[in-house]
Image 1 (cartoon, rainbow, N blue to C red):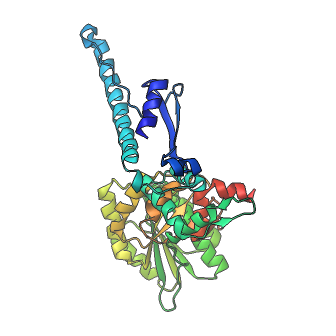
Image 2 (cartoon, rainbow, N blue to C red; image 1 turned 180 degrees about the horizontal axis):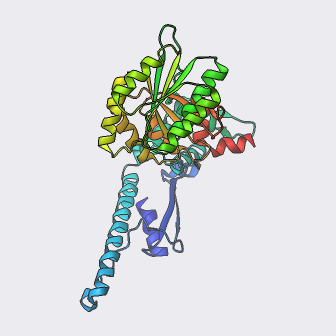
Image 3 (cartoon, rainbow, N blue to C red; image 1 turned 30 degrees about the vertical axis):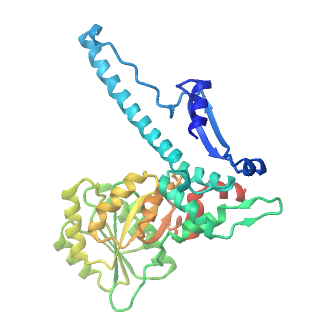
Length: 372
């Protein structure tokens, strides 16, 4: 590999960008000679950071004016950020070069699946592990010799997805379910979908409680849903009022609590939420997350709201996300999924989470093309 990269530097110059590298299968000639063939795809025309890390030109700041000096500092800061990223890429490449024995051997189909996972924002180590685990699966071979790797990969991801059934309604006392989560994830619409399904399709006696008094529009929105579905509704703003509202709705089968959106960074509001939840003593607490958010945002929300005592995840806006790879960051934690939503229609566009269906949606393109 080092010799191959040196050839790239010699023939294309130090600014060349290495786009792809792979070790080719050893044919009969390679077996006889003991040589390994390396394929390197590189270009001197692409305007991407080169993995050969060209040196940073030094600037002569002695001739710059004070005003120009400010621009130079900004440019220098950007240069440092770019160089840090290049150094990170170099470390990754060098690790792959110097530890070839530790890298899993992949065929063309496995390499394609690996690159697809990376394009979906799967972490490098997790993508490598998933492809390595495929060796334990039976991969079907079609009549043309091709390997159907996508369905086994979907099954492998599905095994990592924990799911739970619907809310269990018990006789004697109402089942209390609270929905919590960041702002803008669709909690109010989702609680209306749950209420409508339990009332209209399951014939359960359902009541609503809203704690979202920070947004007047949210109270009015839920009140409109309650009137349409013919449900009792209470508005509370303190733990004491929560206690009174629960007593008032105590003869129902299911009580759904809509809480105000909380930023994971707003510690004061989160403490208020915890006080309300503590007073309600819900049997289940759904953390509502929008799949439109990135992996880091999802992970941060999950870490923060765990303090509230969440029991499962409810994923919204599956129809709005370009890809669902960011979900892996919360799926791999093992917290079970309850429901998923993929639209705004009430009571439709909500379903129980299904591990295999969701894993196929996460992989996306291969299954979309197959269905077409």
